[in-house]
Image (cartoon, rainbow, N blue to C red; front, side, top):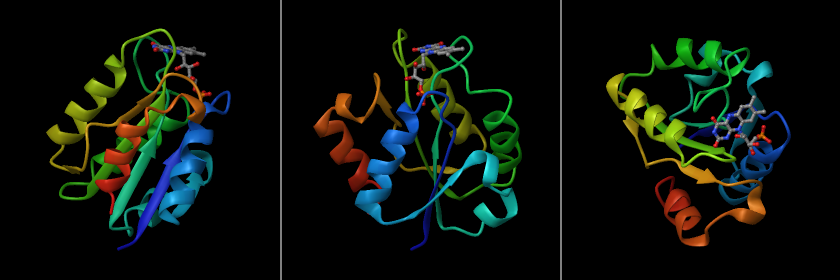
Amino acid sequence: MSQVIVYWSGTGNTLDIANKIKGDLGCDIFNVTEANVDDILKYDTIILGCPAMGAEELEDAEFKPFYDELIANAASKNIALFGSYGWGDGEWMRNWCDEVKAYGANLLNDGLIVNGDSSQIVDSEYESFINSLK
Ligand SMILES: Cc1cc2nc3c(=O)[nH]c(=O)nc-3n(C[C@H](O)[C@H](O)[C@H](O)COP(=O)(O)O)c2cc1C
């Protein structure tokens, strides 16, 4: 089964988590600025990473335009979500998960959220995230 990570990261935390996931799954990885929606839709499973930005929102200049185009064409696709956050409680991820489901995609997990970089990963949460992708 083909898997790909597409991420946006401003200060490197989401990239750090993305690299850990890539290391464990051995999948392809693209910065969203280098990703093409049509090419990404060819993968069986699409793993999207974006931190909480704005006020509990996805990054709107680079990630959101890509994501909006992708998700509109991703009905029944396997999707997994992850990202780093700071001072919030993960609201951006809950909203993101709800939206992916509303588009009819097959959301594989509740989204991996990490308060900082990969050193802050909660092992049990990471394990269940990775297992949902195996
Ligand atoms: C402009 C901006 C908006 C942010 N908004 C939120 C937010 O709404 N909720 C939150 O928990 N963290 C917020 N953060 C914190 C980031 O999510 C956090 O620093 C994260 O680790 C950044 O990930 P990155 O290194 O991959 O860019 C914001 C950070 C910035 C710069």
